Length: 164
Image (cartoon, rainbow, N blue to C red; front, side, top):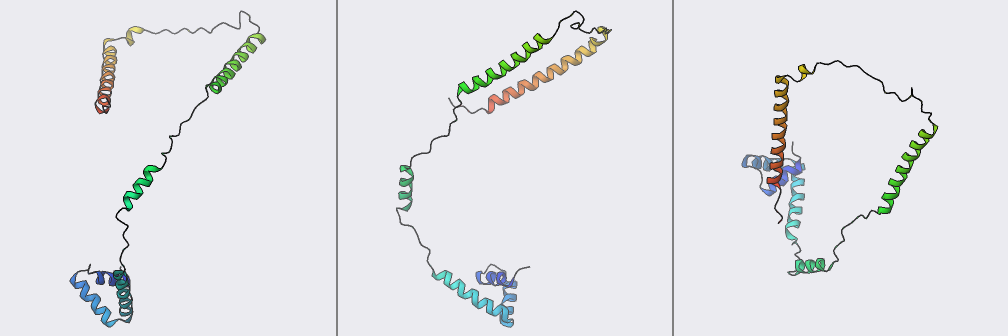
């Protein structure tokens, strides 16, 4: 739903069709709100049409471009990491791990029973796992993965822009 001002602006601009234009003209003739709004908007339209737009001088864009060219180009921000800091952090962690390791070794009492690894007896028939069907499935999956990798590699090389 358009407001009164929107309808009258469309009427003044001539952007409405003939039927709507006739309807708005009839409302302006009969309705006081439409008539007063129409008179105000006509005055405003006439004032806007009377004002000329200021145009910049002919050399304005040239002057602006020269001023921009004289400006010092901003430097690219670069971050410089001090390698001494990286080495000192790495040394701290290596020394901490070494200290913990030597502390554990110094405070432990090695005896024969403490360091035995648990033994597990797993009886498995490998002939079921290495059947011809399982080998074929394994090779098919490997082949599919290799083809996918090759496709990705070729696509990457085709879409890489040539800078040389």
